[in-house]
Image (cartoon, rainbow, N blue to C red; front, side, top):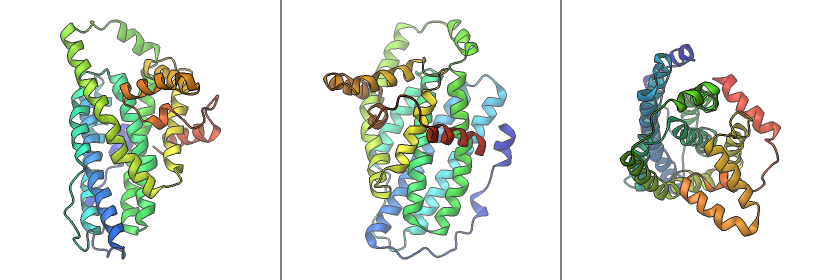
Length: 308
């Protein structure tokens, strides 16, 4: 994987940014520029998350892999800024990142310092799937321009490596080796637990507005049928349905919440759980809870590893 990460590096200067953008209506132009403006913020948040994972990695190879991911995300953020400028033809307004993104990012990075690496990986994996499988591909289809498509093709290759590592780390955190290591770790102090609880409560408070404004609302505009976001959730569902993973704490909470949500009298309890852990409601309350992951979901998850 480290060799693939090194070989897969590219530069924004490799792209031809002088191509003329297509004609767009004022409404579409403003939407597209705002999408890419927010995308730059999302990618910088992802860089900060991988920096945190790099700092925790005890294996030097794993640390170097995460370092390349940080470089990937910073490059993606720069490309998003360049795309926003590329499509901002008529200067119809001043564009700023959505305030909920900035607020959530602050609390998310802070919370990661208190969460275990295993729990942090859950949020990183869900975020990467929503970003790569759903949001970026849908925005690219909505823009429908070769400039965007070339950038997104390169970004998607990078993100496939990221998702493959997310899946790998998720399974590692369910392995006997990791569980044995976890048993040997010292228990957190009362102060550490208090600080962790406060940080996580702030994350939970800001998670839903962030997901709604940055992922779900744009997806309703660029993928009204909801096919790509359903695919993203199906891939994560297939991951946590694996026998080696499903017994871990967060997958167990998700499965339990899905079971509660399927029973009308228990839905209020499931709603409270969904608010507390701050994961997308669509994941915790699937429209149809399959008894096992679909073949398409399993193939899709495996494809991420093969592509990477």
